[in-house]
View 1 (spheres, rainbow, N blue to C red):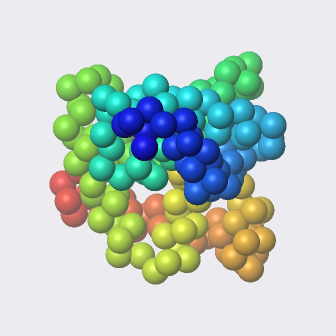
View 2 (cartoon, one colour; view 1 turned 120 degrees about the vertical axis):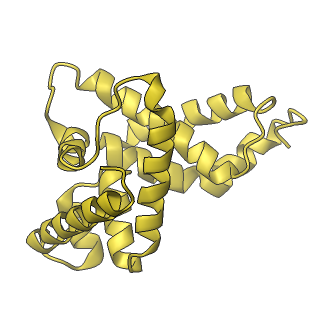
Length: 177
């Protein structure tokens, strides 16, 4: 419907994906109002991108747009507070094992790294995969993960530490580290 520029496509997108999008933005930003604003910005971005864009996976495309918008908003709001918050903490945890992007020449390597991480996630049981994705993609706080999965905060931290070590071994095995 977006390809035909039918405005009802935005309403359908909001109805079908709005709750998920707001949950992702809320995890990153911690504010209902900011999450709602991100959803609206993502809907506008989708409207402006399609056409000519023709995403293979519309849900993933929308979530990536929304996540980038939320991360930009987070960075803007926390510019003076470098190193604080869940976003920085989660990235610091992964920084120990994932190499930093240095230039556009590393785009192919980054794509290979993304595929390797995806293959690693496919090997995990559902709860471990969900914990990993929620922490490192949605930047969920340890406390929220513990509550949602019926674990102690320490159990969540230990599980994620072990998963990062397993990921590191996996990436070494694949020749990416």
